Image (tube, rainbow over all chains, first blue to last red; front, side, top):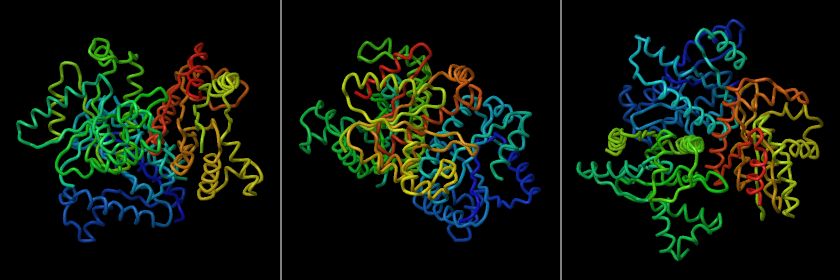
Length: 190
Length: 190
Length: 190
């Protein structure tokens, strides 16, 4: 399909949403068309529309085969979209059983993105942001656990790049340097 | 096959065996059936039974094609086991030619584990343990080399997760916090 | 094909060329035959010979499908070479869109190398070398960016090892310890 496929990821607290929103505004002002898709929400909608599930709880309870089937279906739909899209998801999700690949081989080789963006922040800064974020209930982890998650995400992303040939763009979203992060994302989307 | 397939790994000195043993006792007390398999020993037994080799020395001397064939055979046998199994192996082995994947693509995509556990310890603590371990002849490496090995193992594990959809659970086995590590492993096995 | 296939990589400033040259001299003195191939130059020559392009500028402008096709062609030619070869390339290249895999899946599973060598140096030392290197125009990056690139290269290499079964040898080329790095590379080539 024509158009650029950009996947954007970041651990909770890295400020992914803030960077995306600011960048999408700039891109819109420049009249560059981009469709924004949240991977999780899109998967939920498709699963409901297909009668696979009725609510979010059921999605979590799908067995491994059903989940894989659903992921592949979503990836095909994303691959078929014409024009520029930015897909908001996670390189890996931290579950009680450990890190789960957000973009396993059967998903990433179907989407075949142009670039995967990792929005990162210094571990200490993420910790402070999470502690002061009262709007969401987030597990409070130490800075060490955040560093571990960000390191794992780099490894997951490298594996994606090996399988597809996409590039891996690391955008640092440091405190009081949001403009820089937004400009970097905007330049990648252009 | 039914049952949970857990692969457990850790660099020499991380205390993998201690954590496994303590956890298997707990699991047994809870009457949760688990079969323990050491990947290397299992491979050796199968190779001898199949007449491929007669002793351990010959296993090391198998050429690349023969080794790959044998690994695939083992992986198929492990995949066919019914019930819960815990497979004790290495994410990577340090050889004179460098790090060798313990779970290459053809092994991991055949076993299709549910979770790969990395038992890790602070590099300095591993170093102290190795230095004081007189029962085994181990190459004495610096803390930097241990950090390098543990970092590589995370990358190897991430690649496994990308190819199979398994989770990667990092369990830190810190000095005087063995109970915590054992509890984390036990919770994963339950 | 018979012979050992060695791929050697390293970020700009790691001293890869210096280590290769010194090691190739030693290997030649020991009458061990090795063919040296620079991946990029080889790709350019083949592309010109096949009439795909006329100059280097055109190579950069090839679209993704054409580039992948060309990479696969090169990998097949490298796989077909008889005897020992050392392939000089990059685990990943830093582009404006992010890190691009130098050895994506379709390349590495075709070459099927025996070992991938990562020539690494302390980030600070690389920085000093780059700053004092007046012969080349290199982007001046901070030590943090160099650390990031070296970390990503380890992840890319681990993914290569997972797909092919090759080993990953990290050779540290520290200031005033060049002899050690050369000896390590020479031992791997022998």
